[in-house]
Length: 363
Ligand SMILES: *Cc1c(COP(=O)(O)O)cnc(C)c1O
Image 1 (tube, rainbow, N blue to C red):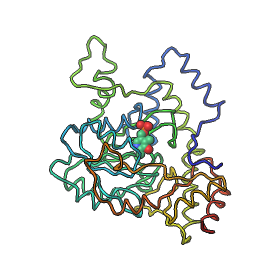
Image 2 (cartoon, rainbow, N blue to C red; image 1 turned 120 degrees about the vertical axis):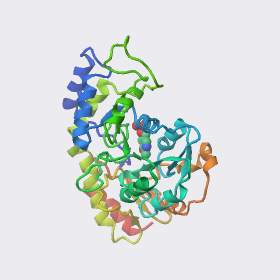
Image 3 (spheres, rainbow, N blue to C red; image 1 turned 45 degrees about the vertical axis):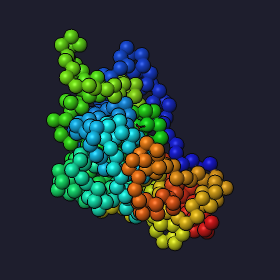
Image 4 (cartoon, rainbow, N blue to C red; image 1 turned 90 degrees about the horizontal axis):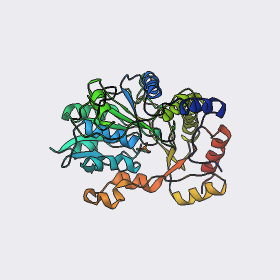
């Protein structure tokens, strides 16, 4: 079976000695390994303000707290995502206001964001869904014109680029990454928040650790604001450091595979491939296509031992968000035709050729 999702774990002879050395070091809590992981991540992303946290959900919640989002506020978001994006908004107490997507990309529509802005809008949550990068030129321009901050959920977009110079995370916005089990770079569980300036760093560090100041003696530290237990530990961080040294076997392969799909499918009349915004380079966490008779295609692929699926339920269908129901024509179109194909490090060129020839035959 060619799986849709498969975690990349570095070779045991490289990974296990590193984990072992931390486990028996006498210091497994948040310490030097986390600092080194943050430094190496900051260098990779090109943003000095990257902080390790326990999950992407924690990073998103911290982002909302840093922007002082609270009960009664509105946050514009997309329903075409995994639940944590919008659960984090619910955790902050704010109301989710859906914007429709662009049906050529599956990503939040800048035009519809602008239509949904009210006097209560305090933030806009965008998701680089499936590793495709949102139209950040249009979205950043809305942010500037209305003075509303943007949070980027980059759980699917580790290694993706806004353009040839800038990796996702090197942004004027707050960006959240996931190192959860099924994401490009996994530390089993974990996440990262990338901040646009160092002013936010001090408060972010306190908020991820009960509101306490790390490094200050417990008898002298002074809590002024409720914080959370959102820190990363040394063992997790060391796994992350090893993963970061293996990107050529991991995220680079997703990108290579995605580009092969793009070129093999661009003239296939049975499928619509996703439009890539501007000069961005997706990290193709899963490869998204739109087709008619989607269920029949998924069945046919399964008969050929290929796993394909829709993966996520559109979030506006959850009862929790009933208060925000609305009509979304592009989302209806996209969600009823969407299929995700395997694209990760374990997929080889022959697999992709086989999948594309099935897509050529029809179903
Ligand atoms: C996985 C995921 C998250 C949450 O990541 P965790 O690290 O598991 O908290 C957030 N947003 C999206 C789009 C995701 O797929």
